[in-house]
Image (tube, rainbow, N blue to C red):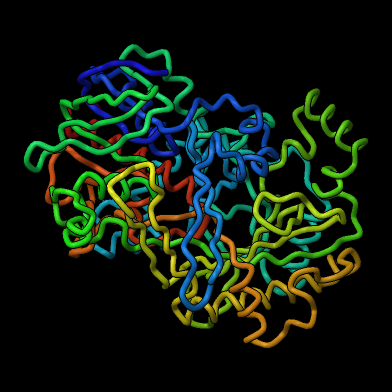
Length: 537
């Protein structure tokens, strides 16, 4: 809705995974008036809430920014589609619902980089605070939090066979990738509640909407922040074709994500001074790290034909099965329509020197030629072989001074030789696992890559041609102590006052897994920091 309001205590820019958490926590029995501004619409599209609908959301410009990367100069020379949520709930409203926190050492590494209070023991309470775990509470899990974390209502025979193949290949069974150890093969948990998506919007924002101290404005595009000297005091946004200004008594909280948080900062005069001058943008703060340090989990999709008519491919192309699965979902909230992106996965180490798994391999019960495309007419599966700790670094950069112009997104996928070597090795190890007895009788053929692609160069060429994002951009406003850091350990913007960045962009290094859960954790921790500083914890 559009509202004309002139001043609040806190302004949250972006109603995504982090913004929804902040909106809830900062208005829960506090005296603070909070404004949440989201560029996209309310999350009323029914395909947002039906889990299998995430495939439709990848190509829906009504709720998706429909971004693309720049072509790489040497390796990944294609423009890679990069879906980002443009809707209340952000990317938590369009993602594959995989609940994955990352490796414990990911967070210990953040602390080793000088970010006090961000080690695993420090962040675990915030993971638990956010979680309502179907399996119950324990050392690593909790119940009673807003975000539902669930197992599939029923197991799937292909997923069971995939896990068994991993064990036959010499790996351990791992019942919980979010507990003590990450390596091994096992089931995947989803952010779903009774067969429906549990997004940041449904988990955090919906229960808070009726609070009198929370104002939500959707379909509102922030153009730039407003500064008085080095203090952020407000922002300019546009809704219903009208430009409006709102001021903040306390702080502005940037939660627009790893692509749009740096872009908005750059358009506001916060970024690399030389580049801002070239765009004719007045400089507020010379912070050259804004937009730099972009990281993502580039992946190689391996596609297989199977003789089991149990995939989403046959669901899509079989009218009778559509009806039966539709009825099953309507009456019991189970079946293929209740399916998250994957049922099973594996974490493996392919480099001898790796202390922790460097490859994630998630099993998807469908196959397509491209992202969000029509499933193949044959029954097929996909294994996404994803690089967990890339050394390559990219950037996000505003092209001009207009927010309506998408920024340059240059991930520099596979620029580092270690990334190429690890992903090729990971691809070949997963191909070996697929050939284990548990799966071999049901795999008809390697569809992509074909069986003749075996040499290092051929495998690398395949990866470069078929590489996809795992939809996990992070790091573009990194937390740290060096000159390229944008925020400190309390997520306060350096050289500025009244401004924090609270989203996936603050990660100094990417987590070893899907990034929605750690983004929610970051916002939970940030909310506690803010409330403790302002005397309302």
